Length: 494
Image (cartoon, rainbow, N blue to C red; front, side, top):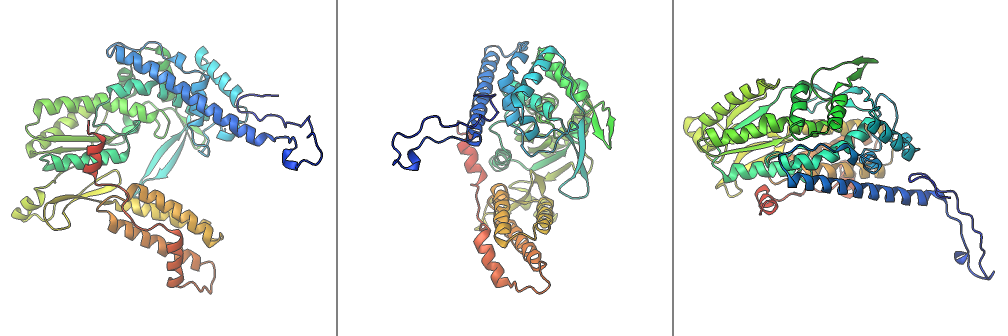
């Protein structure tokens, strides 16, 4: 008997025996358990849901291409059960539950019935968003905490489905220097664009702008008005408003919020990009055309933005105008973290003539960017190294996990550490960052050595034996990314 898409089949009992008794057991008719069949059905459902989302996105993309100016007034019908199922499978299985306490596995136990009920409530207007469970996580510096909003699982599913429907609409609208949380655009794409711009253009000044509490302070009224520029389906608008007004649950108390969007929710990255597209990106594009007297580059990843200028007066005027622009939309720049510094291929020579010392550095997406020279000592080279607070945060996390897993075998610990380090190197192993990677590997070795030695008061673990463990389990320090200008040329050769 075949059950729902995500349910296990009943055990299949053999009804026909082999014709000859002397045949081997492998030739006999065997019954099949439900586990394997359930996995196959789940994989099929996942594939079908992905195809449904792709088809819906293609139809929306075609409508947008045919008419770039008119609003899209019929979108909610694309949010069907297949798209909701895709939204469910796109979630992390082991993510923390929201205020409803329902986990991924619990919801999957009766998935088809749950999705059909959610679909019916959404299209009948009976869906109600639940408050997000607020949780504070330490920032990379370890001093401040970032508030996260953990939504209920049905809110996550519906948000993922709506974001999938809205993405092809806004991908046509968003500008080229916007990289954050967009399909096909990673953090390294943003880093490559910044490095290429600094080296290829006459950039002498860098504005490192930091927006204060962006996700917590953006104006919901302005956000809805921005969304309404392209979205004419009032049902989609109402869903977004429900998510924004749901509030947060903190210390068993529901707090109603009047501004911002919960950082950490599925819909927040897209909504943030929409807000900054109208507030920042379009304005920057016009400002560059009207006021810049020299070369200018801009790279934005979510609310982190870097702007480069050829002339100091352009940079100062841009900073002044930017403050005024953000103030109109309930935003502001952090007075301590926003800096205008002299940077680029001519910075070291100019500062040396003035006796001003080495050029200052700036941080972007986990890397410290600094001015250096090529290996032969001639010519400008943009240097990048791991941001110190990022490395310290990762080492603290590894130290705590090693303490909790101290009882496990050396092999288990080594394989886990190797996986962690390969993930770390996959992001930070860029040219010019080899010394920082070597330091990270050394700190990991010391932490692991101390953890193993604490398993006994009379340890016999020497550095020589430890070096063998490191060579066996931990990956070597090796650059894994090409030079940014090389990859940027390949990616944007068109």
